[in-house]
Image (cartoon, rainbow, N blue to C red; front, top):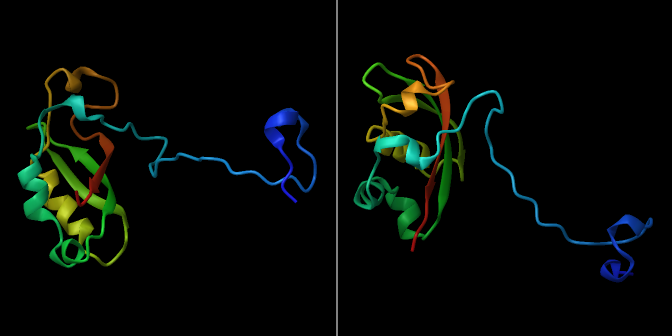
Length: 130
């Protein structure tokens, strides 16, 4: 039996109550900073993503997400490896590595804590069919 929790308030939950909750999370190591898009002087274009999109996934209209762990190089580019990819075995990891070569951190980003040469950052790459 689903009781109307909204009427009673969430502080009055009782055993047997059922409810739905929206949960948002990111797959990343909390010890590593995540570089937001505006931290880059250069980034892949939509055409770059389209060229890299795995053919098998594109033909089946499957979206994917990849978490990259990247080391910051002296030229402000990233040397990345695949930490996670969803769905697995569809080629999204390789595609994300391909587009990651276009990322160049902004000079101002390099002045921030956690963004020195040799530091590691996490970068999420999402592939979506539109």
